[in-house]
Length: 111
Length: 119
Image (cartoon, rainbow over all chains, first blue to last red; front, top):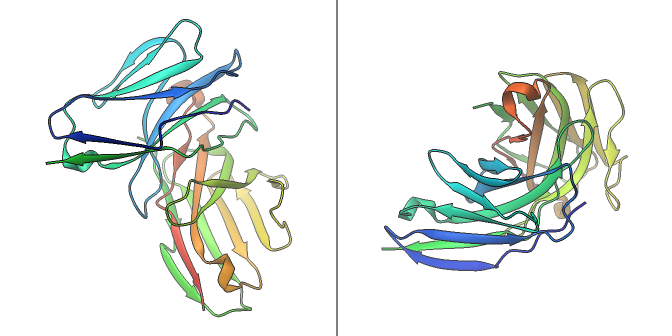
């Protein structure tokens, strides 16, 4: 299972763009990259998933370089409500493949 | 998006008793469900993986006789903490992988979590 490394914490201000980078040097060919957001006392919430290049949805963008050994979650114009822990996970689809959580990045958005 | 529901959201039990937590996929069938536990300010730790109709696969260090997992249908998995002790107090979270991955991608969806306090 590919191990992930993220910054432990980040600080930002309302309205700024936040980029959180995750390293996954041992990612396998059939692994996808998925990002989750977790608020205190809640289960993780799916943000975005990708395999290569760039993926964008209504809340975030995910940038994946050609070697796929890292990925960057981009949150445009963060607000106070984006204060949470963000987890980057890699794993293959289907069957028994499981998702192992790393330490995550604790993002604090300030007024 | 897909919804996974856990019940109860909070439970307090006496030391030595057993408590059951349910995990349901409300709008999809789940071939695989996962159980995690999380201590305050720590990451999620995978406890076990359960597949419908078969025995759960436990992670190293997780006692299968203490944490009983049943995945009797494609929409329900249960975690029973037997002979609970105060150190079992934690936040327990389940997740489910949709059977129909063609429409859901490769995403795993998580429940809201269940707080267990053993007194």
